[in-house]
View 1 (tube, rainbow, N blue to C red):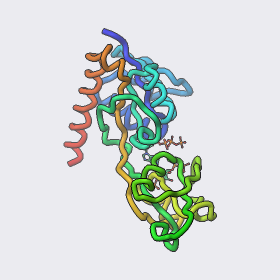
View 2: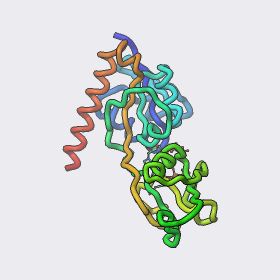
View 3: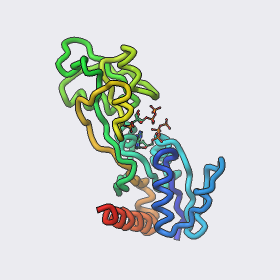
Length: 216
Ligand SMILES: Nc1ncnc2c1ncn2[C@@H]1O[C@H](COP(=O)(O)OP(=O)(O)OP(=O)(O)O)[C@@H](O)[C@H]1O
Ligand SMILES: O=P(O)(O)OC[C@H]1O[C@H](OP(=O)(O)OP(=O)(O)O)[C@H](O)[C@@H]1O
């Protein structure tokens, strides 16, 4: 048997991912009581976990430094990635939406349209698919602020509860696609560590189905 490395996205997805692994009986005590450490050994399985930022999760799996990654579909769509996406964990559910101030009818606007977003690739592809050639302005956070300050006509961003849009007086014009956390696998690892990788995928898949049944 060969050991596995798993890159987990820290932040919003972290707690739910760790609790799925815990529910499966993996030895993740170190991940639950982590302090500032970033690498953790499973106390039962021959697995090492890394906690990384979402974009870096893809980078580590692309390069084979991590065999497996848990990352949002938003990050997968935005980054170049040459991995296998094997499972939808059905956690971290949210959506990509297009939003603007109610008075800014950007779909009927004539002339130059500016879109603020943390996700330039996703935004560009979306507007191209609508036959619209827009200017994309990259923003790193608090994207909802940009149309209020007049930096752009609209935004492409993530919506979960809709509270941030509402509290900033923005309205949803369209949904781009649904988002949830996915399990990605390095292509070489998929061949060379097939049984080890598939055991983790099958375990997680069982947990996803059990959790879906519980929530019905
Ligand atoms: N309300 C939400 N806002 C943003 N991401 C969400 C939300 N709900 C679920 N997610 C998912 O969680 C993932 C991690 O989000 P998180 O905000 O922790 O990190 P991030 O997007 O890299 O931002 P930051 O730069 O603040 O760390 C996202 O990529 C997305 O798939
Ligand atoms: O629909 P809601 O439940 O209100 O959630 C959506 C908000 O959460 C995310 O921002 P985040 O908190 O990650 O901060 P950021 O703006 O700095 O990226 C996202 O960019 C929205 O602003």
